[in-house]
Each structure stands twice: as structure tokens, then as C-alpha cells.
Length: 294
Ligand code: GRG
Image (cartoon, rainbow, N blue to C red; front, side, top):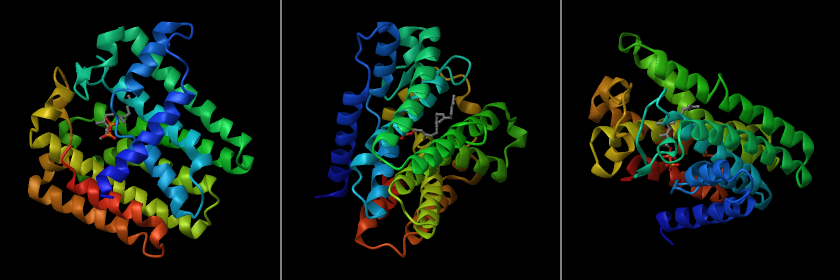
């Protein structure tokens, strides 16, 4: 089976689990549940849950008990996108080619739907204590909270949103990428590994994998945005802040940015040198991320 088919199959498993765990659209109050489901089922690639499950596999365990935690990471990712699109942030009309949450449900509902997705995520994480050791679950909850908070993706978003272009040097840009994108990739991999009882040496290797993967992913995302693929342009239509955004291609040019992405992907593969076939999917994902055309 080729890698893309394998990735899609794994994402389909996540989709099925999300559909099973989510409150139905008509649960009271329906407006909020419809708004939550609208963005959650809008065609995301499910990379973060797939990463969490693959990390469990790399730790030599059955990924099944990790599924609710993996799905919790998708809830947090979705909340961040809903809030990122709001008028006070990027003011985007489209996301994944569809109208953004606030354009469909209104700004108040979009804020609440984002908040509800974030809150629900921690409920799903805590629920893992029913089938997995409570001390592992508690550690994961603390780590995911840090990754989602002001030391993680909110920190990255804050620096991105509030920095002037004069302040935008390589160090600041790397901080933004490591926090906006990297923190959740890192938390996803660590969630799968910790819940599966990986030892500290394996956890450290998987963490290095995730950090480099996050960087490779974000630089590639910047390059794809810069190269003006029409399928992606809708994502930012109506954006007020788009042109102010800090990117690797803006700072280094397309060629050097691509080289940096490749180096980060290679470093992520190298971090798995002590793993065998159980990490094959993670290795392929790292190479796929820098070559992706979507
Ligand atoms: C808390 C408001 C708030 C924001 C946090 C994550 C974030 C910061 C903002 C989202 C916008 C953005 C460009 C984030 C960078 C990470 C990124 C490239 C997200 C897109 O991830 P994919 O490609 O998305 O996995 P899909 O659509 O597949 O789910």
C-alpha cells in the first residue's frame, strides 16, 4: 500500500472515532454542537491524532486505547483554527475551501464553539484514565495543557500576531513556528508515547522527531502558501493580516526555506535511528511532509 493511502486509512479511523465520541448535532443547545461539528468535520488531514497513534505503535503498543487522547488533540487543533480565523485574528472567510465557522454561525457562536472544543478535549483526555494508568494520563493532561497554553500554541500565536515586522528575525520566526505548530505536534507524539509507557530514552527520541517534523511541516506550509497554489489561496481570502505574516520564504527566499525544511525532515528521521520497523510510518510521514503538494 502506498503511503498516502495508508495515511488516508489512518485518518479515516480517526474520523470514525470522532463521529462516535462527539455530541450529536441536535444535542441541546444545537447551535453550538452544530458549530463544533462543522469545523471538526470540515476535511482536516487528522495529522495530530495520526501522529499520536503512530507514536504508540512506535512504542510497541496497540494504539487503540490511545484513540480518545489522539482525538482530543484534533479538537484542540480545530479550536485553534476556528479562533485563528476570527475577525480579531486573521479575519478569514474561507478555511479548507469552505466558509469559516464565524461566517456560518456568527462570531459569538464561533468563539463558544472553539472554547467548547478545547474544553471537551480535556474531558476526553481525562476519560483515558478508565482504560490506561492514571499517572500516565495525568502527565499527558499536564503536557497537553502546556502545549495548548501561553507556553505553547497561544504563545506562538501571541508573538505572531503582536510582533511588528521590524522585530521579525530568524529567532522570532523559529519561536513562532515551534510554538504555533510545533507544540501540538510534539504533544501529539508524546501523548501516544507516554500513554503507551515508552521509556524516557524512546520518549526523548520521539520528541526530537516531533520537534523537527513540526518545523519541516510549517516551513513547507509557508512555501506552499507563498507559491500561490489556487486551492490554498481560498484559505486566506479576506485575511487582513496575511501580508504581515512572518514566513521562512519571506526571510530566506524559497530555495533556502525548502533546504531548511528538508534538513528538519532529515533530522526528524535521524532521531528515530534506534527504532526499527515499528517506526516505519513515522519515518515515511517525515519525508511525505516536505514533499506534499496539498
Ligand atoms: C489559539 C487563536 C489560536 C491560535 C493558535 C494553531 C494556531 C495558533 C493558528 C492556526 C493557523 C495556523 C496557520 C497555524 C499553523 C499550523 C498549521 C499549518 C495549521 C494547519 O494544519 P493542518 O495542515 O490543517 O494539519 P488541517 O486543515 O489538515 O487540519
